[in-house]
Image 1 (tube, rainbow, N blue to C red):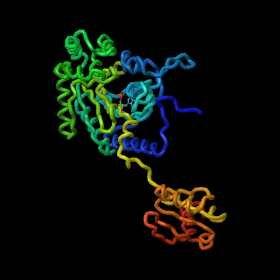
Image 2: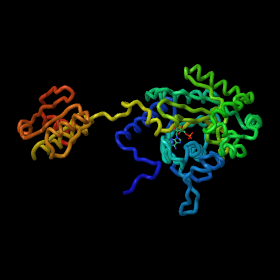
Image 3: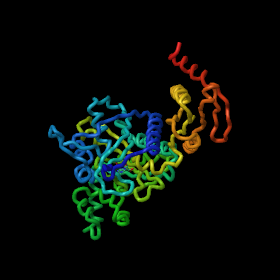
Image 4: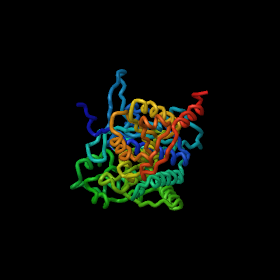
Amino acid sequence: MYRAVEATRDILPPESERWAFVEEAARRVFGRWGFHEVRTPIFEHTELFTRSVGDTTDIVSKEMYTFTDRGERSLTLRPEGTAPVVRAWIQAGTGAEDEVTRWYYCGPMFRYERKQKGRYRQFSQIGAEVIGGAGPDVDAEVLEMVMVYLGELGVADVQLHLNSIGCADCRAGYREKLLAALGDMDGWCADCHRRRQDNTLRILDCKADREKVQSLPAIADHLDDACRAHFEGVQAALTEAGVLFVLEPHLVRGLDYYVRTTFEITAGGLGAQNALLGGGRYDGLVAGLGGPPRPGFGFALGVDRLIMILPPQAGTPDASDLFIVTLGPEAHPLGRRLASALRRAGLRVEFPPPGRSVKSRMRQADRGGSRWALVLGDNEVARGAAKLRRLADGHEVDCPLQPVTELLEVVRGERG
Ligand code: AMP
């Protein structure tokens, strides 16, 4: 027996309907904010990620699915969506300096992560990127859009955690303060000892030593004037838009390209892995990947986690409009014609093969939540009419059958 690869899974109905539902809601809401969809390949040249996400990050150093293809190229299944979108934007030919591009994407990402609840090796993200637009309004507008999206989906206990990690200049000064506060790092985990050398800021993301992290100096206290003004601008714009947030002075993200604004949104019901989405500003990334110096801002949301906390009724498929049961050799072809005509006309019709008893089929129709049922036997064929039964209350309506199919066939142009 073959099984799905460890830490991957099949999304089966009815859960798959919820996936379509959140993706459609994203298209609808993001469209209102002027975003358009972009679809990039699932794999890219490995260097795209090593150069953007960063060599020393967990993603690049431990988690990428990298392989050599038959043309001896090193390729990697995308572990995140921002670098591919920026690559696509540069490749498509860049616009004028004051142009702002708003793109969103949905699709699978791949990371070789430790197996745990809420973490998969193939998972799906919905993300949005704004390329161009350096002002704090961009950050606030995108955050507002995400909050509206989650609100419309009915996600509960949503909290926006906001920070600024400044630019490279602010960070150099901050790093000195951080190193001084860390001292000889007695009692810190092995990962953090390693990070001290190659990616000091990531110590703030240590999950093992959370309390110690809280006592470290806050990066937001070491911002230069321009970075501080940007951070204050974001907060003011959010407040004006009525978007609540909490400042999280030690929030850093697992990708190296972020500057200034970083954020995470958590939601109730997720347990330990309560981050639903994260993102921030990446003003150096476009130039770093060979494009013009353009600012950028974006986020990525974990769809697997979003699905876990959707209200139970959200995205459940509509039950069928009509369940047709046939009895006898003549009734079945009539049922088939009816089902076909009604489906083409836009109704959801269930039409199971003959064989089982009417009683068993009616139980099936009830269980599936069908609105109406129609039983066709020799009697109904002979009289060209049948009783439509509303399953919720047993109300019955006697309906002629033939004229309906004829009318539909004529209207559809299938009969003269
Ligand atoms: P990141 O790209 O690391 O900033 O992650 C953004 C969001 O993607 C997280 O908040 C999670 O909701 C989701 N995510 C990241 N990694 C995984 C994973 N391995 N399995 C499921 N969801 C993930």
